[in-house]
Length: 210
Ligand SMILES: C[S@@+](CC[C@H](N)C(=O)[O-])C[C@H]1O[C@@H](n2cnc3c(N)ncnc32)[C@H](O)[C@@H]1O
Image (cartoon, rainbow, N blue to C red; front, side):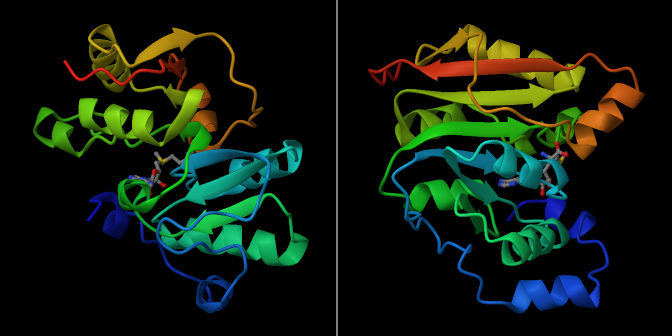
């Protein structure tokens, strides 16, 4: 169970509830493969869905799987799907780690934009990005697949850089092919004048478990 859920539950409007109850064609079961021949992008934690739906629209050559436990944001994404029927958008309402445990196919890209930083030391174990999680990502990515992580938390940046210093299953590269609009948390970070860092990690083919 992810700790953030309850704190972010927010009040669900009647419209949110309506779209949460809908059997939308966009919704994947745990680990289900989308019907696509396009490259797949897993978006972990798309939050309120505002930038996510723009990115889906702006990148029609990629199929997105948006994974988000936060119900209000998930409901908004379902609503966008039902009102626009994009052919490149799929959704899962839950924990990305559970979804990844069940998938029997590979993904081309993973995006993690502004993951919850859990800055307090006693909460650091709740951070999504860990050595083990990088290993999971390595397992679900195609050869030369890549991960884009963006964060404005200096504590999370330090944490990621420490992990990457020991990481041999990924190399850092410059380019990620999917464009993105500034998300809600990205805009907040700009307003606060935080230093925003982007890490793009490319899978090194052979999994090495030191
Ligand atoms: C700080 S918000 C960022 C939201 C959005 N990406 C943005 O940039 O505005 C982090 C999001 O990650 C989601 N999240 C946390 N743990 C997750 C997990 N294990 N799997 C999927 N999403 C998760 C939270 O529910 C939250 O919506």
